Each structure stands twice: as structure tokens, then as C-alpha cells.
Length: 535
Image 1 (cartoon, rainbow, N blue to C red):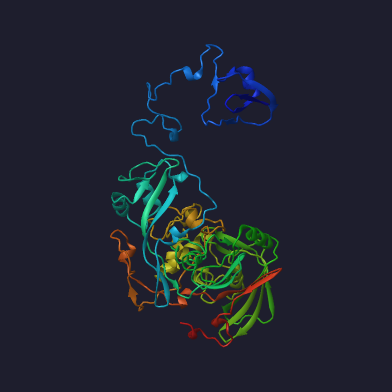
Image 2 (image 1 turned 45 degrees about the vertical axis):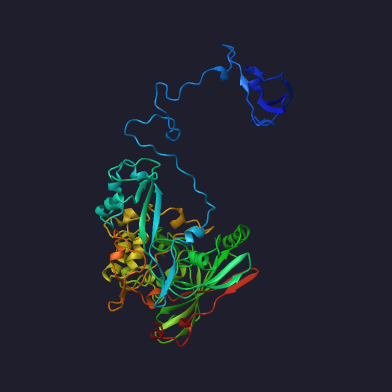
């Protein structure tokens, strides 16, 4: 219970009743206590803007403001508020309290201006640029030195690289440059690592906007372009291309497409529309139709696959058919067969990760050019019937080793998505380390690998890959800023061919109770198409 205390000078107080009973409240003039109020706080107001409330000490009769303030450092060291009020011991580092992230912040023009594009050989490329990876100290790092952390979790670069980067002020701890990597990490330490960042090229086909009515934005996504920043991709993503080239930002993701998948991609323009569409997704009111080209002669007529799907690795979204998996249902119908491959219509009635790809692999008709579910790492039958003869850890390792032996760029994508080519692959899958390919970056934070799919937040994508490199391809170094510490600047990589940047899976139609959005069918879905037609 509270009472209102008023006095001259247009002063108004809401004071808890218990304070009125226990203390004498004095003002510059007599106080009048009026009816009790129920406001749970003390409200102070003055037209003069300078108000003090004086309390008497019932034992000494002294007013608090009459007592001299103790000196700030009288007999004791100055207390650091951010250090929990404790005096810092000699040699002890001050660690500021962690800053809260604003979950509603989206990518802005400052992000879009980090670098620019150029088109070469039909590919969209990004000029290399400097970028700050940021993270708070992980629990498993506490008590370890920076050097130990770099050695154990970021081994794609030598410790000599990190020592050189530290000397040049590129590694910072709580915004202070670190010169000695022997510094021991503590809880709430904030680390920043500045790296010279290179992005893989994507197909140079422009993003085609199908609908933009103020409530939804629908685009026809080319293959090879991720939806959100992830791994080595940031500017070569749908979100950044829309922001940089079309001035469109603050979008809400309704659904995602694999990086190598093309077709209809839907965003909500407003939070209200996003919630409405999310509800439709949960209630399965939305119909999705895909078209794909698979290996072999697919059976005629309608074929329904209801095998449950289990996630093998949440980090890269790798899945397989397993009795312990979640219920799944996909309807397939053959549209054509050219003697070698078949065009198949796909209707996923549930929304599991890689559902169409996994079910087609199980049926023995993997999608043409599928670098994951068409891989021989699954065994001699490539996962047909769910048979692999390998544990999940062995399967993950086999996939990495296959791409590694082929020296193809798929391996880079695997490294992006946290698979390490070591005997500890199984352990890594249980951690939350998401380093960039170069190994220079700290674990990715919300802006780069967040799982939340709204407000332009970066979302984790499935392992995007390139099937193989061509030994005789023209090799060119990346133009733009060259950095003397950057290992990528010293490498010369062949450009991928368009064939290597595409998987023959296309989102053809997205339909709801009162709307329908569709894209044109790709050339490879034509009945008379043969693989040699695509280069």
C-alpha cells in the first residue's frame, strides 16, 4: 500500500506506507499525507526539475545528506561496476558485462556496403573484403588460452598465422587488441577476429521478382545461391542481393530452398503477414510442387513414399530414412523419360529437411547432380532402401573423404558446416562451432548462422557443394584487395562450370487458400532435354 505526499513547489511523491511508518519524511515545507494509492513504485515530479527527499535517522537524528560522502578510494581500490563491484586483483583483467542482442535487427545498408559484385564468365563474384567475426567465450573455452583454442578448434590456419594476426591488432578481446595469445579466457570474454574474407562464386543469373505487393515478396531463385548468409557465403545470398541491388530489406522468411535448388521463394514483407503464413505452414494449408530430374527410369503412375526421416547431423542438415525418424509423406509422378533420366513431379505433404532428396535416394532414383544423396559414400547402392552399412559418424567421414579425394569445392562447403576432417568428427557434431572455411573466424554468431528464420537473420543452410573441379579450367586469382596474411589470396582456384553449380530440383509452385505463385519450368525439365545440352 502507498500514500501520496504533496508539498509546496508542485511536488508529488508516491511513497510506500511502510516507509511512512518507519521514517519521518521532511520537506522544505509542511507535508500533507493524502489518501493511499496502490501504485507499486515511488514517483517523483517537480516543475523545477530538481527534487530531493530527505530521510531522518531515527537513532541519531542526522539526515543522510548531511553525512559526508566517503572518499571513493578510502582505504580500498576503486570498484569496477562491470566487474560485479569486486576489487580487481593485480594482473586481473576487467571483463565488461555481456551486451544483449536485439533479435529484431536486420541487415542494413552498412552491411550491404561492405563490398561489391562483379560478373565474370557468367558468374557473380564478390570482391574480397575485411570482416569481423565476433563471439562470446564458449563454456568449453573458459580456463584455456587463446592459443589453445586456436590450435584445437581453428586448425585450418597455423598458429603462426594467428600470432601474426595478433601482432597486427586483428584479434581483440573485449575490444582491446591482443598481443599475446597466452591470455587465459574467462566467462563473458568477447572476442573479435578480423579476417580477409573470400566468397565462392554463384551463377550470374539475376534474381527475378515475381510478386511484390507490400505483403509478400516472391522471387525466382537461381540455383547455387543460398537464401541467407552462412559459412563462406554472405553477399552472394538472396538476402544480400535483394538489399544491394533492389533496396529491399527487413524480410521475414516463410520457407527455405537448398542452395543448389532453384525456383519459387517466398518472403513476408510484414510481421503480420509472416505470422499468418507461419500459421498456414503449421496447419499444412500450403501446397508445394517441385519438379526434378532423376537418374534412371522412374516408375509410371503415382508413387507415394512414407518412410520416416531422421536427421543425422543438425549442423549440416544431413538426413536419412530411419524408423526412429519423423513421419514423412511425398507423392511422386513421372512426367517424362528420355532413355537415361526421368522428369518427376514431387508433392511433399510434410516439410522435413531434404525430404524429396532423401525419399528419392531411398527409392533408388537420386536426383541428377545431387552431390550428397547421390554420392557413392552411401555405399554401392548409394543408400537405396536405406541400406548403407555404416554408422552415422562413418557416413559423415566418408562423405568428406570422397570430396577430399576428388579435390572438389564440395569440401569447402563441408568445412563451412562444421565437419572436420579428423577422427573426432563425431565429437564435433555435438559442439556449436561454426567456423568459416578459412578457419580464421570465430564461431559464427546470430548474424551469420542463426537458426531463426525471420527479420533477415542468417539461417543455417544445408551443405551446399560443387560436384567436382575441372583440371583444365582456366585459373584466376581473385581481384580486389590483396592481404599479405590471407591464405586465400595466395591460392588460385578454377572457376566452377554452371553444371557444377546446379542440382536438378526446382520449386515450381507455392499455393495457399487464397493465393498461388509459380515460376517457369527450367530447360532441363523439358521432355527432349539431354545432359549434353547443359554446359
